[in-house]
Image (tube, rainbow, N blue to C red):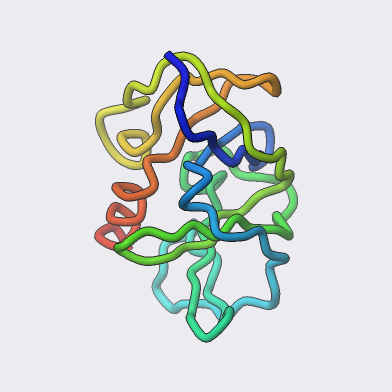
Length: 140
């Protein structure tokens, strides 16, 4: 099965992720962050961007695959529930995906990842942005 609208693909460490292209508003350089006391380790901090405060989420830490170095870029994802910046070590562009869009797990963050989907660049975990942002809001 192929998707109809395309996904913005990006890497966080060695893992590839995709978000629906219509939810990815931009790619930003991560500025100095303000730490949030008591926040989980995957919430690196927040920063002001275009009049709003955006949380920066490290996908590697959230999925249990910590990076050796900090990602300096992030993909800003917008949903009706809110916006979040997801760390990215590389941004690969918009691509059409094929394969499965089944849940990759039954609990935690993995229930909000779909796949395995396939792109020219490799196997991709597709983030269900709506439920993912809701998960972050309720977990944090």
